Length: 199
Image (cartoon, rainbow, N blue to C red; front, side, top):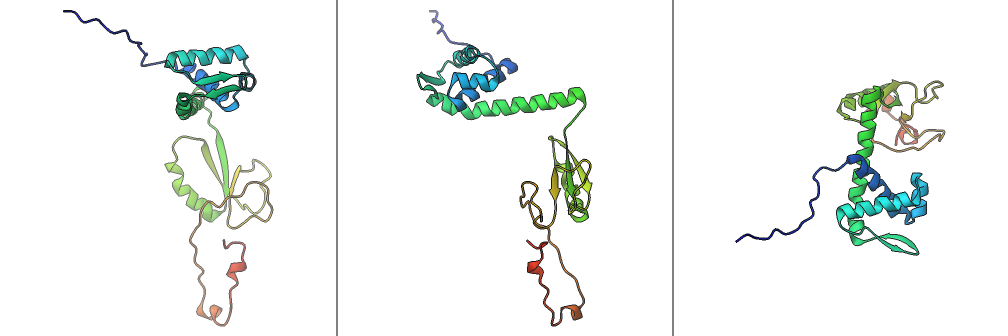
């Protein structure tokens, strides 16, 4: 006796990565903005294009991702659950694009980091541990004064900068020791806490 085969939907194991990225981008834009018009304006395409790609994505997955109403588009429970996955797909696609562009042109983004001699020596020890990302160009300079040409994008310095020219973040600490003769410390207070180099 032969058994009847149940009909099932065959989902291809390998999909077109470009179409997958495009549809995920449309999905993310619509999920964030909640409007076909705003998503289309954001991506620089037409509203029918967004709607068509969303319908194609829903058809491929076999589940509704959005609830349509006059107020706009809202994620279904399934859509909300898949939102982090779509973000990962977008991030992976962007990394793939950046890496392939670097291989094609032979060019890589370079970030200049300026630091004094002590900080530069510490930073140089760990640069070989960085995998991927931009090329780091370490510039040993007196970071207390501006560099006129090709100024570093990041400055590493001891203490809080006197002039706020950008975002300032504390990234860590370096252990230091102060050595002096015993006579220097006798009956003499060293106002280290008032020093701008002490944080």
